[in-house]
Length: 302
Image (cartoon, rainbow, N blue to C red; front, side):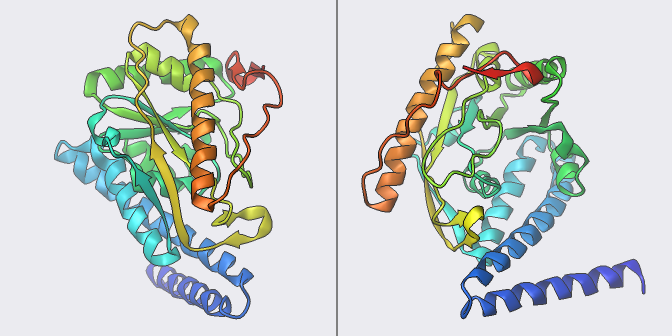
């Protein structure tokens, strides 16, 4: 059997298994969790493969900066068709399209945030990602070709170098960057934010561009891995007013990060309460001001 035949057989079997779990979910609800999980992985691999080709073609015709936008949009529609999940954007002032260049930041809940990016990603925007993702088949290839800024979190010197390169790219090409200042997924059942790392804020101040906060309501009613829950549904998100950084210095970064986190947390709680149709209390701050001190492997929370 040739490699192509083996791939075709595997794809057909994968498709059949996914459909079987969807049918089973009519009787056994937890089967829907497995079905949408399988569908999501298939969508991610297929769109990442498409992204590799799109990155090459767009780069050849002079539109390489739009490779991640094109791939994100493809993932948005594939996921809607296969899982019934999408994000609805509240952006009445059109900050997504009118603010460029900028550093966009958002809260990070689960792997489903890849779909959130697919729904809101503006043109001429790239993401940052941990260096280990660079070696992933399909996804890593696409991210490398499409201009992703890779950061080695265990090496503060490497991280600083990556930030400097991103700041230069922002200034030179008017390219936006999207970052998750929490640095990892929270998997929270209720609205909350992990402490913010300061990299995104250093980057914005260094490049002299605004920060655009993007807040997503807590969506544990749609995806909650600990409870084996993965339902179809729409998830609300809101683009907040850009925060100017011109004139700010490195010494201002900590206050900027803290104030932005406080703003995003309030908006996240409000957005979640509106989506659920009931009041939600603000989460208590466990310790300090929610900003990570220092950088790299030696970072501490204060």
